[in-house]
Amino acid sequence: MRFRVSCSVLAKERFAIIRECLSSKPQDQQLEDGDHPMSSMSQLAKLTTALATVLCLTVPMGVTPAFAQVSFGFSLGGPAPPPPPRVIVRPAAPHAGLIWREGHYGWRNGAYVWIDGDWLDPPYERAAWIPGHWIDRDGRHIWIEGHWEG
Image 1 (cartoon, rainbow, N blue to C red):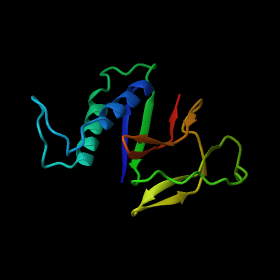
Image 2 (image 1 turned 90 degrees about the horizontal axis):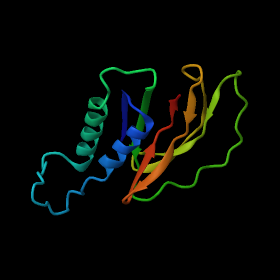
Image 3 (image 1 turned 135 degrees about the vertical axis):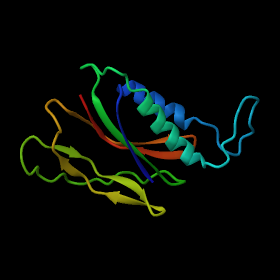
Image 4 (image 1 turned 180 degrees about the vertical axis):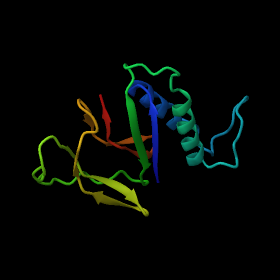
């Protein structure tokens, strides 16, 4: 599954929100006093809804130049970690000014599949490419997509 969210937030704030959303209790864990079950939603649906809601509601009313437009996404992987990245020879850039996005494994239809790297045209001057990477959060393998910052 892939999710894409686009909001204006600071990078530190974005990762704190993801970390908080991913640390929610598994469904089979006992509820404590004050906890409210959401039995009609799966853990994934709760995570997705919480992430989208928090990101979009935390956008400041007056965005100043200190804030950058950030678009990022994530994908849930399988029960095992992905294989190590392939070692490939980077092809020549079609023209100057492009940035190389490394290939990586993605989770598609119940298996990891290789997604080739490609050349990207920066969306604006001084845009910096932040590469995607896999994280392991409590046994959940999550691909954090690469994105532009700056």
